[in-house]
Length: 387
Image (cartoon, rainbow, N blue to C red; front, side, top):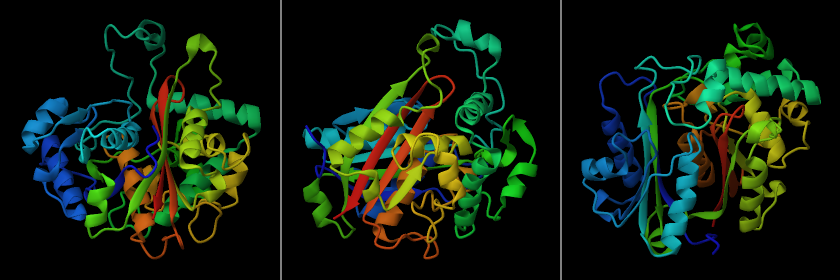
């Protein structure tokens, strides 16, 4: 069953703060839910499907009760930062199957206020199969991605200067976002002279740590047509996991190779049809690899593609992360998928900042990576159209 045209995004909301010192995580979810529903012209009483990941305190059961929802469908799929893109696909499937009519997706967290970052060794969790084999090497998010970046450099000749161009584009866009965590425009030189965190990744190659959150409302076609909002159709989706498979995984590829192919096939589109892309940017290397794997350039040519300024709105071939992305704007609770969706909705509605709004933006792609490229992750791809 195809989900193309079976569901529409009616509401979107991004929490404006990047440091939240008092509000509880549950309250952040509630504020974002209220904002997205208001944006859609709906209320909590209209919601009959709820979707969340592990950032939701107590999970779906606790949040449904906390929000006062009366739902007939829930989904708490957990794939890290890509969870919320997966949730959009699952919501569309549920709506198409008649399981719900108005689906609410929320996320939120306070890692900055709580002093969390990606440079600390991962917490040892018992009974997970890979822990005895990987934990002795003290894996962290940043050293896993640095390992992947180093391998990409070795195999394809990618350079630190090319990686830096991803950050340069993000900072160019962020200057127009009043809520961005980092608003200063940076140069390639600024990135290369920033402190080395894990070779070859410098400080400015890494995403921000921020509090915040967001929410999305997905509805059936009948409801969408009655609302006073632009019609943003879900046209195609794909999701795919990737793990090391005992060392057989080629770490210069991401699972976007598979999730992207599925999304394009369902939507009946190709990379050439995409006017705007939200690409998960936990690190600069993450963007380059996804661009290659989604077919926006040949494998190994991602560094050259970004260094030509192609990610910059109004100047390049493929505007990417026009809100500043996770590198400059927001990476709430280390899960950037929801903000990628929200900026794509803004672009399709023509509601992005005028300086970065893509002209005639009617087709957008969102891709998220949850987990770690150096170990195991899930890629989720979503294609949306303004109709």
